Length: 102
Length: 102
Image (cartoon, rainbow over all chains, first blue to last red; front, side, top):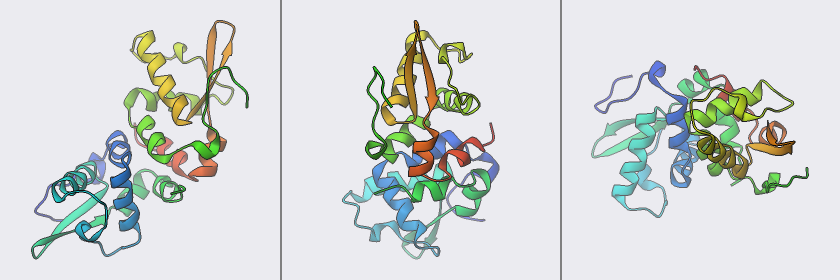
């Protein structure tokens, strides 16, 4: 996986960082949206009720924790859920999370 | 489930609070230890390298989030993992978490 932005390799992903990244209502909504868009999304299209700079912060937190991969496309950035990595490291965690009542 | 300490009912448990409670190295070690002791443990027996008051704080955070149940036994408090509740709400989450590399 190559990218202009730094991403932790699978073996660098730490469960505490993943849980911290997920333990936020806005980030959880991002993850749920990405789970429904396997090809990725520009998170700016989501109606999250936060400013662009706050959204950037949330996506960076998810990226640095290893939860999402972010790649540039034109002037926007496309985020995808690192489902393969998360499922390999923590089998069942992501599905359990996505099953949570809203 | 009755107790002298307040616990959220299953339907009151919120994923954000669960994830926040789990996103801490000490609390994660408590959860891993409790997962191996279905009958519960007095967390004071664990070698966590924290003071008694810090341990009390961590156990309270886990209890208030709905991750553990705490009952008095003599002068100590026995914590048990609320595995049934967590597995019902978030199937796979706990097992995925416990599978995480240490």
